[in-house]
Length: 76
Image (cartoon, rainbow, N blue to C red; front, side, top):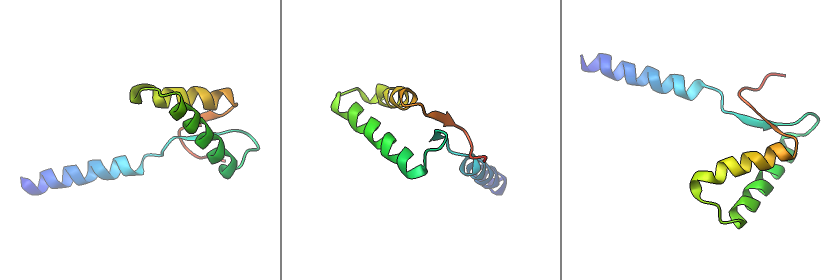
């Protein structure tokens, strides 16, 4: 029984680890430039003293304002 429980936990963790992590993308913009833009948005949100619960939402608004889209997986 313990082996079955351990196997279930292991399989669940493996499924979570293999799911693609969302990423920001914009046509004709390199990964380095995207990282720079994301860092700038995070910096600006940090300066605004936004509460932790709203930070990611504000970063997302900033990135969308710059023309980026949040994609679920990388397919070119």
